[in-house]
Amino acid sequence: MTGFKDGFLWGGAVAAHQLEGGWNTDGKGVSIADVMTAGDNETAREITDGIIPGKNYPNHEAIDFYGHYREDVKMFAELGLKCFRTSIAWTRIFPNGDETEPNEAGLKFYDDLFDELHKYNIKPVITLSHFEMPYHLVQEYGGWRSRKLIDFFTKFATVVFKRYKNKVKYWMTFNEINNQTGLNEWGLFTDSGILVQPGEDAEEVMYQAGHYESVASALAVQIGHEINPDFQIGCMLAMGPTYPATPDPKDVMKAERAMQASYWFADVQCKGKYPNWLKNYFNNKKFDLDITLEDLDVIKAGTVDYIGFSYYASHVIKADENEPVDYMTPMKNHEVKNPALVRSDWGWEIDPIGLRYAMNWFSDRYDLPLFIVENGLGAFDKKDTDGMIHDDYRIDYLRKHINQMKLAVEYDGVDLMGYTPWGFIDLVSAGTGQMDKRYGMIYVDKNDAGEGTLARGKKDSFNWFHKVIETNGADL
Ligand code: P53
Image 1 (tube, rainbow, N blue to C red):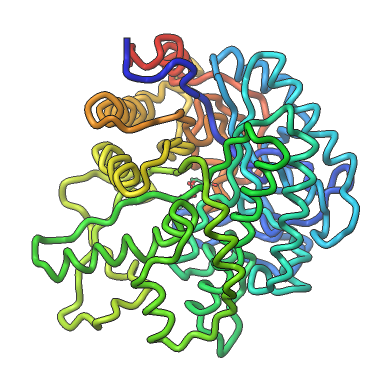
Image 2 (cartoon, rainbow, N blue to C red):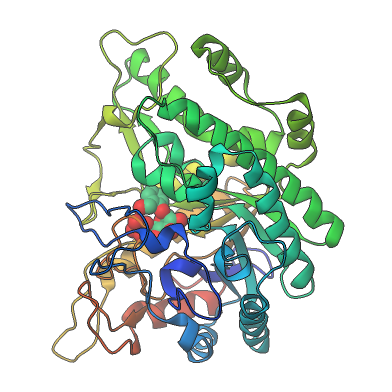
């Protein structure tokens, strides 16, 4: 017996653009993921002005789940998954984002995929927008800096809520909506289709986009509940707790503000209101933001049913000698290394206890059910002499995190709905565009150069996770 409830949603997580491929098949439009090149550990992905011939766009083919989904879902069933988290590629449904009628071929693909999952009693868990908005909305409207995006998004949400109202119960609105608070190029583009223009204040643009997304998310929650009152609709936050570098109160206050600056989205989506510090910050900065009283009513009425979140790593922050009283964002450049932790090959600090900490933090603050919808280790996998991948390092990572998750449930009383490790089938990395940064329990034969047969195979972690699910987390 474990503290995990009956019907605990053990599963696996992916996102449409990172595995489907078929980027221009059956009427699909160009998404923002389709104009991002491959990078690596040192080189950032390039965001190109449209698709430039000769460049390497790893999401165009990805692992061709579009062509392999039947055999893949069969393998997911063999793994024992109770649920499968993916996203609906907005560009399959509305190729440009501003059409009046949806693309039937795109809708049909997800009908077929959901039917295939239900054949094996695997519940779909669906993110509406996971780093793949229509590129046309970037070119024509400047992405989420335009209020018009609220209408385009809610139209997309309404169409898929209606179409799949009997096939999907669990939904999330925007994936890692708080990544953009770091104000880097990648986060602003993937979250919001924002390319900061000369003379613009990135922070002001981010808060405007984040506000429109908050309104769109709250509207989607209300529309979804009208279409099917049984829907469970969550937010989705990137959770990486920020710790103070030392017990110096300056560092402690700085870490607190770093948390506030990232998780104000949770305040808005879970409590239905802006935190006071942020309202004051907007005023003090004299930002010219379009936030209406009607918007605030919408936000109040559209709070989420649960908190979906990703968890990979934690962070540490150090205050400046003379910290400004308003603790400006971004603060990521004040990060220091945590001497207590080891890092992955990509420099992510591995911190299982941080997961328990994060679960307590969310639970105390918002008193909502939690759903860990991403967790995992990106690593280089090597085939052994027997041709197999013995990924004990991945098992070790997952085991330690599940152990902490168990403590949070059994000792701390956290209400946890499920756990879906990220990229349980190898796919294209969102951050770097690599194939060789692997999270999978299922190996996919394709490398960074795009070579490989796309054949699927089981790693050791496959059999291990199967056992974890079968024993509801008792046998780790
Ligand atoms: P990759 C950064 C920090 C936390 C989560 O990331 C992140 C990122 C992106 O680098 O993204 C989430 O592929 C995201 C997934 C992504 C996964 O984490 O860069 O929701 O789409 O693939 C892992 O190693």
